[in-house]
Every structure is written in C-alpha cells, then in structure tokens.
Length: 367
Image: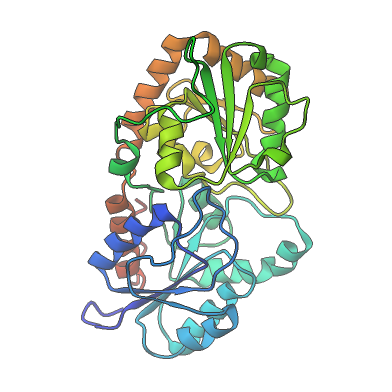
C-alpha cells in the first residue's frame, strides 16, 4: 500500500456505539477512513449513535462487495459482525487488488450450525488477510492459531475523560438510602443468556444480600424480566444514556460482568469494564469475558474473576466485596490506574500502524 495513495480506507462495520466515536475520530485523524455501516442490533448498553462524526455511508450487507471492489479505496477493513458483510468485503478487496484487514473479536470457534458452516471461509480470511487487528492478546492468539500471519492488538478503549469525570452527580433513584448508603452492585447489558444476567440473579439470591442495605441495579434490563423471587433490592432500570449510566456507576460499589459462553457467542471484551474502572469500580467478571481473558481485569489486582456460570463462586465474590470495603477501595483504585492506558489514541495508533504495514512484505512486531 503506497503511503502516497490519497484514497481513504473503507471500514465496514454494523454500527457505531457511543464509545467508538472518539476511536474512529482518532483513526480518521491519522489515516483517512470512510465507514460503511450496515446496521443491526446494538450490543452495547448505551445503544448506537446516528452520526459517528467521520465520513460514513449507510449500506446493506449485499452492497458491501461492490463498494469494496470499486477502486475508490486503498484498503478494506471489516469486522466479524453480520452474516454476509465479511465475505463480501473480503471478496471485494481481492477483486480490487487492495489489502484486506480483518478486525477480529473472536477468541474461540463458535459452535452454532451457521458458524460451523462458515468456518472454512473464516480460516481462509485469517490466512489471507494482510493483517488481523484484534481486541486483545487472547484474540490475537486465536487468530494465529487459525493461520493469521500478522496480528496487532488495538486496545479496547472508551472516552476515559468522560467516564472518569468526578461529578458532582446526584445519587439516582432507586439506590438512594435515607438511612445509610447501600452496597450497590451493578450490571449493564442485554437480558440474554450469554450476558449471564440470570446467573447474576441466582447468585444475588443465594448470597442473601437482598436482606441487607444493598441494591442490585440492572441497566439494559426491564422490570418485567425480574421474577418475584429475585432476592429483594433488585432494580431493573432499562436503557440508559451514557450520562445516566455514568451516574449509576459513580454511585455503585462494584460492576458485575457475568457473561457465559454459548454456541453462538463469547464475550469479545465488555467495554462496560473500561467505563466502570474509570469510575474506580472493582470488577467481578467471569472467565468468559474478553476484558478478563485479554488482561485488563485481573483477579486480586483490580477485581475478582470467577468461573463462568458458577453461581456459588459469583455469590461468594459479591459477599466478599460487600463485607470488605477496604478491598473494594484498593481494587477500585488499581482499576482506575490500569484502565488509563486504554485510550482512543492508543487504539488508533495501533490500527493506523497495522494499515500502514498491511502491504509490507515482512510481519510487524505485535503491539
């Protein structure tokens, strides 16, 4: 790829979550990009943005191939979301004779019939991609096991300045206590099996923390999801905008990410971990969470890591942090220090370097 080539990079993805806006802006400042957004369901607690703030167009997945093959771009990047966008982008880049860069979130082979049927094509993409940019070393290791020749970690990041803001933020309902401030555990995500919310509810009930001055806040979950035997002090607050989510995190004591692997999903990262760590919260994460597998959340350093789906272990972790405020403070302070290098600038620097390297004949050193 010529450094003098004035054409932009085509970046194919489904949508842009609020936390990705700054990342794409930082990348666009380093190398011109144009986003091709094919839509779909948001997997982020704060939804998606209408305007990502960089050049973009809205397309269908079937339109991606012609766009990638048009000759208007010097490289094509595509993620793993969508059913047909990835093979279309890969094929279009090959037709145009330009580098294809895979932005991969996968750190294990998924076992649904659709994923198994598509896996021979995925292995071809891994082997022939000019570069594979990943969410973390856990994803890079898997990509290399599938034949990837060049991998670079672009660290998952949020707007640290926004999420680390110190307020003042008035305590939101329903976690205000007139007598004493409760121990507040928080979850943010979709009420689906893979996000582990039912495991969390079972652990909360088993811990009997609902009978103490505590609260379990579930963002992204509606009240009709909560059964009458949830254990008390459980509050489903539905969808939250970024400011409201930050407010809840500010007044919480721990964030829980209890994801479990399924045949069709393994938590790639969990950006809510970055958001909460900026608010000095320790994290309780399952070992099926990418932020833990990728090295951001570390057991005993800035949080607690428990086996996925293990109700007893999760219940014990909740109880341990509820009973030990000094440990919460220590873990939370370290969390804020550990998340600080995970910036949009670091993500953009790694991605831009991978794009520059995509046409070179020798592998670059992994970031």
